[in-house]
Amino acid sequence: MPVLGLRFRSLEAKREQGGAPSQIKVNSVPKITGVRESNAHMLKQKTLSVDFDFVTEYSPNIGIIKMSGEVFYITDKNQEILKMWESKKELPEDIRIEILNHLFRTCLVRISNLADDLQLPPPMSIPRVKPKVEGK
Image (cartoon, rainbow, N blue to C red):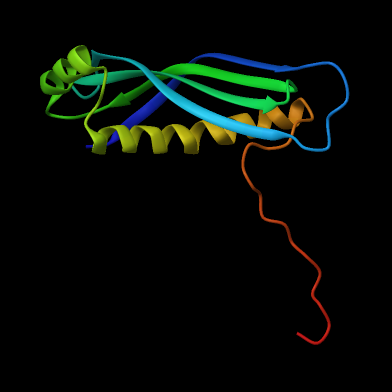
């Protein structure tokens, strides 16, 4: 079943004072922090609301970008998934992978814009165009 959408609750971006070292390590980590049932009024069906934190750290101690929010997921197995979350704090692997991939796609784009505003490197590799080499 699909991810219906995502809503951010908070965005925090911070760059520390001082110059940037020659080597900057960028690490992005999503974390699912909660699962509950919610109403999708336009669908007239209950959905899962999956709470998340997404953190991108720039080290050594250069900056951090944090996002929190919820992903709306529709499935016909709400009660089964809620029981699994309550007992193990886990989601079925296929649902977990779908949600995490959605978080990476959505959050990294938003973080790239915030990083640019803070003059930090983007959290993912961006292709670069190079000049054509003669003879090839």
